Amino acid sequence: MTDTATVEPALDIEEPVAGNRIIASVLAVVVFAIDMASPSGMTADPIRAVSVAVSMVHYHSLSLDRFRPLPNPGFAVTVVNGHTYPLFPWAVSLFAVPWVIVEDIGHKLGITEGSVAMVRSGHDWGLQVVSMATVVAAATVVVYFIALRVLRLHPAARRRRWAVAVALAFALATPAWSTASRAMWQHGPSMLCIALGLLFALRAQAGQRGWMGMGAAFAASYAMRPTDSIVIIAIAAWVLLAERRHLVAVVAGAVPPLAILVAVNLAVYHQPLSPYYTGGQAFDVSGTMVVALAGNLVSPARGLFIFCPLVVLSVIGVVVRWRAGELTAFWKALAVIPVLHWIVISAFKHWWGGDSFGPRFFTDIVPVLVVLALPAVEVLARWMAPSTGRARPGSGPVAAPPRLRWQRALVALTLVALVWSVGVNAQGAILKSAWCWNSEPTQVDAHPSKLWDWSDPQFARGIRTLVWGPDRSSEFIRDGVDLIGCPTEPVRP
Image (tube, rainbow, N blue to C red; front, side, top):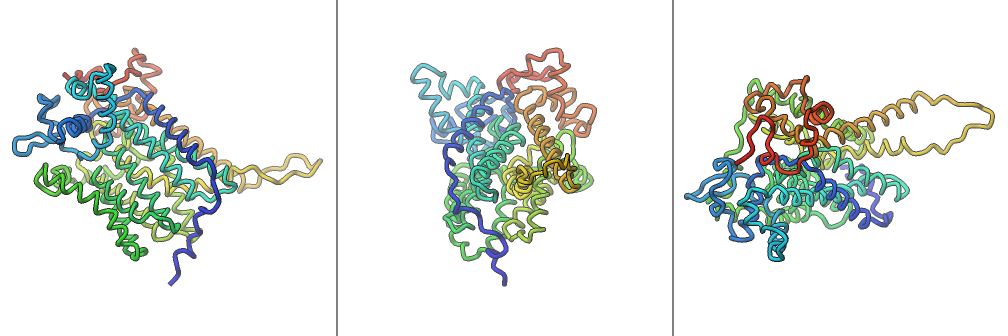
């Protein structure tokens, strides 16, 4: 049997890469500042997240009883023995707890209104954003360290530069900006946990500590979002088939977060998993399944390849490793995850994710897509390296060989895809009309045919309104859209 270590080149961890922590800190600050400055607030499912965090801090409970009457009282809640609890995963609210404490300290100093008053007034979107800006900034740093491990570029400074570029592309050219940073969706914390799990997996394969951390991170991701079970199943299959000797360490890491999840659920919901996990969303695998499969890839409102064409690099990256004979069991597991995820989210009755921007349901696995793209990024980096050859004096201009011309063309297409991806996702993070597309002129859940309307695509609504709209200044109003309102949608009472 061939040892996987002889098939896959060793990760280049011996070469020192000075300045990692400084670069990581700068990356975190830059991404955090951009996310905080972005004014668009896509509040929908996360409407209870801060309330739950405040209840945790002040009342040591998940109950929302003390905040009655609730806005939209029947939405995103479940009732157990007469008490109101959040429907969506409560673990997401843990990321707001530090900022709730900061808010309360500010209240004692006479600076802020305090977290309880803030929740009761309905103006908690700012705390949602600061919480998720922190999460996305942290995920960006993790992606940076992942890129440093996977990319095999020399010298070290060159590898650092490309790792920074990959991290910024992750933060600004994907739903990490347009969805995860905009409110306390499940996707931001889920994305961070998956990214951490991948980093620990890479560390473990390089002979460093990481098996327990990987188990803990992936188990925690399940507490953030149930569809992360797809990632867990694929990684578990890899461990069982190729790394069985480390199974005990992986399970030991996974047990604590899963035990906490089950214990809290038993105490609150009187069952091991909350109703959101056990009830789920309705599946419709009949005629709409084909439409959903296509829509999640190429719909002008939800298509992954439309809103983030850089994802093509993930496909190319898998091909690059396969042709190099480096598609090991780990990389095969990663390659399977997006396919399984795509099928599962396409089986949801509301595959478009309700009121949202772009391919929201793909947000969780963006770190997986980034890792798969890194071999292709490495190839691009080598193509873009300055040539060391020199033309002979007096020989005149030399035409580039056909292969070099193709390489330049592909590099140019990649740069176009990058600019497009950043521009499209910037609309979701900055321009209000990109969100209001969901309700204007018709509501997307009531008229899902608009998901295929190329005459008014969501990916261009923000720019079109900014250029030709009658009231451009309203595009940059900072707050949750449920409090700002859209022209044809009433403001939340």
